[in-house]
Image 1 (cartoon, rainbow, N blue to C red):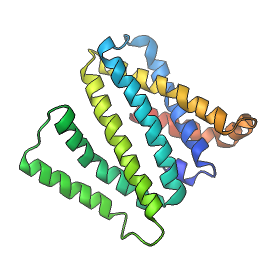
Image 2 (image 1 turned 180 degrees about the horizontal axis):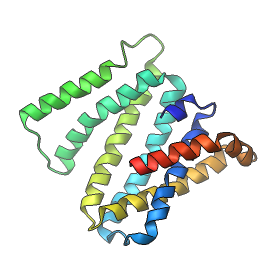
Image 3 (image 1 turned 135 degrees about the vertical axis):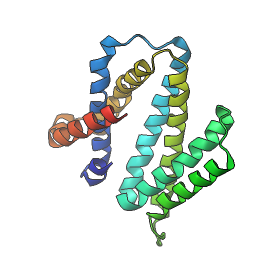
Length: 199
């Protein structure tokens, strides 16, 4: 997130971080079985949800500060995940757990500070980002549960994500892709490897 926000070309940096984030998946791919057919719809949905999330994240950082958008996006996502888990997976939290979750989310969101005039667009994209986080988190949770090998699901997800973001990068910087790659390669590679291993 810091690399994307600090980059002089946020969309390209986001594409490169996610593309290179697939490298750990490609390395592990030969050593894991194919995911069970039951989880393929979740994989497809997660790739789509991640793609929307990457777009809203770039837009949030284009219009707002990291110190504002990141706490909003990450602070509101757990609550959305809990609500989606209740609706989609029938997972129930007790009263104390809901209270703890709400307090934690409110604490994280409060780090963004009091909104100022003209920050509506960045806040809107930050909340849209949190919705994307919730969507892919629930899909990935259900996807991992629907296959016998959770690592197989994750490695395939990382590898499959390389395709749309790689194509997005080539389209965004058509005609000057190599120049843009050279300029952003080191940060994109480092951030991507860390992101892929982390996921």
